[in-house]
Length: 180
Image 1: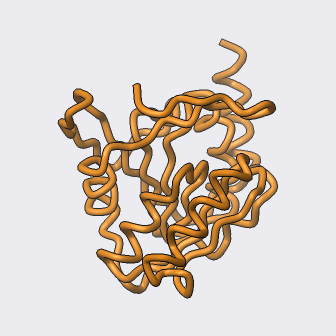
Image 2 (image 1 turned 30 degrees about the vertical axis):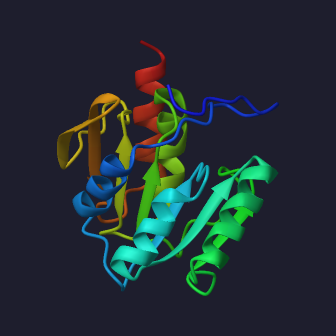
């Protein structure tokens, strides 16, 4: 397991996404120069750096570890991408996700499920969500993709935000599932 470090108060360890998987996540979401990519739990910034460098996208990284935010910010500056990328130390549940056209995740099954109502409420219809390794419970992905890397096999999930659904429907579905 690569770079697995726990930060106090953090729900997931810092595990780096292999670069081949990063590239496939961006390809699966069809990221382009017109996109604003939000990486929730951005770690060392590799997903956003690839999105900006290789696809011309703008991006925002949300990370709870201040050392990783500083590292990502400096790396983007050194690569000449500081005008396209912003990294913030922020709790992803408190962040405003409305500008995002693409959201990338490598969190945990529980966090993905907890994020689902926020994603559906704040993202515009047509926004894409790509998760490395973890699904969103009973929300069926539009596509899945198996990717091989030097670390093994990885499953990627893609969802496209549908036309707005009433939050009562989302809440009712989550309550019904959690009572099982």
